[in-house]
Image (cartoon, rainbow, N blue to C red; front, side, top):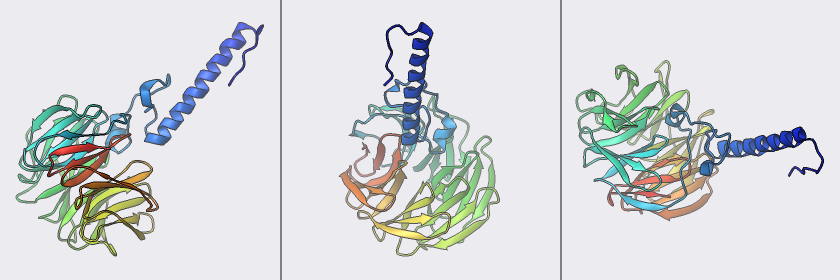
Length: 345
């Protein structure tokens, strides 16, 4: 701490107070940025240097502050896909044909928005929430701030069975299981910019690593890497991992949940090598919180927290039919498809 002595000139005292405020404020800011990936995300909001969060950062997985309260909260029927918009969590409810906006502090439903048939995936682009409607092979665009649908649904094609969605900062990427492809959609106009045919048979999950888009095939046990600029695909085989169902980028790695073998494959994005770590039975969803992986185990309705080196930190009970998982900057949220709830951990 600084010591202020009697008799010092007032300008000295004022200067030292200013330096102390800047030093400790900047330290808090740096600690906050290291913890959350967003400069200005200071828990409690007491930092005088706190900066506003850029929604586009949040859309690309740079997080903001929330709180540390755990709980389980009711939602509509068969919740599946999750996305965080910087203030609220969004969940796609498969059997209710809607998405719901959830207050991350209380778990209360803020809004329910009707969308297309069988919504399964959801992504945030900095302003809008995009919903993948598997049953109607379409996308619905919802303004996050007002929870109002914008425009008509965007048709993806007949019976393409879209399964998941990712945002790369400019385009939305929709993985389609029945048509074995990725649709590249302009986030401003909604126009389909490209259709990338994948040399696989049942792609289920999609993620963006800053340069490439990745898709996991649940039948052939393969990963496909697509250059987000050139749209050129490259397919690689997973070893010791069957029925891959979920993807999450974790720094230089891609975490892949292996439903059939109850483990997680950690794929090195740089050199295309992999390691295998144990998970619970039937893992589906996975998220990275900046330090650790969180894996949703469908087989026993739990979530497992793993270090990036594969050490299990803990396994925690959730609700019935644990499915997907998302991180809000402080807590992870898990969709429980059978229990019709969200768990916050």
